[in-house]
Length: 215
Image 1: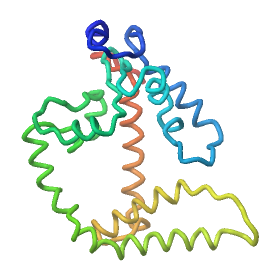
Image 2: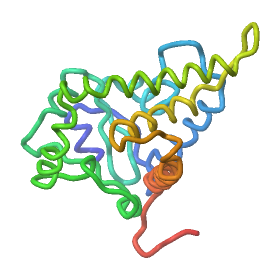
Image 3: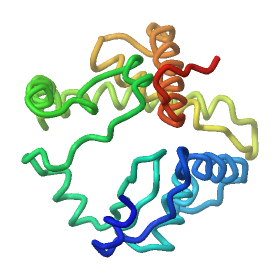
Image 4: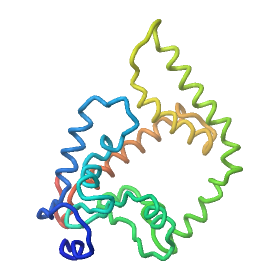
């Protein structure tokens, strides 16, 4: 597979038995997250450090190894648009860890007719007129978050960790627009969803060997 990719003019990391680049991806991500975040809009090196490093080293079209499977890194906007708008089925979805599929499935993992059916179901919810009707809920949630920050700041200035509140305001908006309630009322559901998402990420960052299960 590596030879085939090279013959097409692609460059990337050398394959490492079984794990590929997974261990390096995890190591570099942990290393970057442990550093203090710079006051900059250049966030890609922090959230996707290994992918950024590969793109810098091998170009806008390169590849890494996710276990024994190569994954293409595409950073050219026109090519990304072409891939995302393609309806021929040539660009298949990434096959995740089967353990992750036991935890969650949905439109992001469906393909073919099943994807088209679910896309048709949810598409009306994102029409412009529908989104306009949700603006009051967006405004209410954001105002409550800002008021919370203002009330927690003493005289002068201080540093706030806004990440938890940004997560909560997203959940709050979903609750208000989708279910007519607030985040506080649906806190237990969102806590379970957050826990589930963590398990999915953990599963997708591990190598799946049929018949072998680690505790």
